[in-house]
Image 1 (cartoon, rainbow, N blue to C red):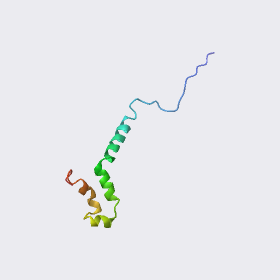
Image 2: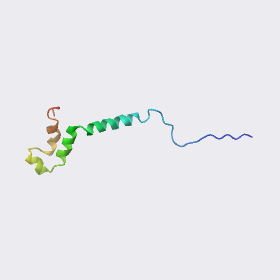
Image 3: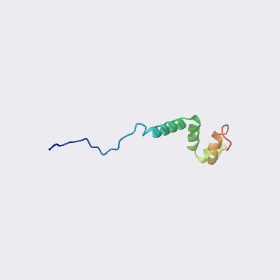
Image 4: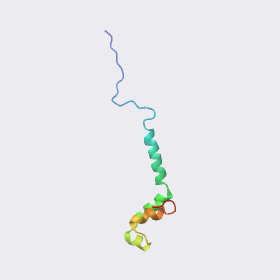
Amino acid sequence: MAHITAPYTTEPARAPFSGLGRRILNALVVLAESNPRMCEIERLTAKSDAELKAMGLKREDIVRHVMRDMLYL
């Protein structure tokens, strides 16, 4: 009688492009977060309402203020 053994794994087989979408999405997130406008939005968001008022801004107008020359909002 012959006994045959084969390797067995519980992990699914990986296709060569299985993580491609995730890597592309991560790259886009890194690009967006490194944008100077995003840094400015984060800086202004961290300020208190009193500081924003002294600058003539309201919290809900931060994005409109930073993107004023790019977007019509």
